[in-house]
Image (cartoon, rainbow over all chains, first blue to last red; front, side, top):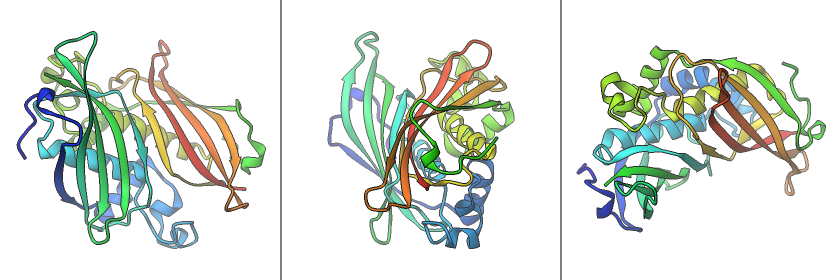
Length: 147
Length: 147
């Protein structure tokens, strides 16, 4: 993917299709054991009795994997300085081994008041199940970028 | 930690001290390689040239480790059904091997309109460096809980 060279090249509405990724079952279990050890992320039988009705990935894992996919795409490699936070929603759970697609959209570009060499770019990341478009992650995050 | 037995026992302002945890350096590097491969999370020399000035943990890792710490405390083990999202801020970065403390506060308790057996409890998690109180993570998350 061609890296963004400067936030000055960005405008609200621009979007980038980052293609597909998947959370393999073993990784789903491993992540849950470390960071979100709840029955519906760890145990098939317990998950059947949960509100999800089947084993689902931790939303933390979906979020982390999405950021990993974004960073590995190279899109932000020349400009990203970090993010100050994120507003995230998990509209639906994600099952292991289910291909998802990811799209990043520019929501806002704002020069930093205190640091003219920086801009704050609000990016939206949407991750959806490839087969039916069900959105499993919707994030709005302010990224600090070098100009 | 004594588990919460029902959201009906909760009221805004109640808080729970979850004690201390730490992100070991090896785990910081491992997490970053998988989910946030950026130079300032992976490489000491590159990190020195970043706006952080030294190697810092991925904010995704801080968030994931905090949730892991919360889940392992057992506080929510009898009531938590899942969370629909989270609004998170990283006011300061966290260095590896730095002890942090975590506190969870009840912000709002609201019975579900559509499902009387459920309540939506907004929890705030604050993670701060033990030595000087610097807040490194501040999360507001709506948890669905069984009554």
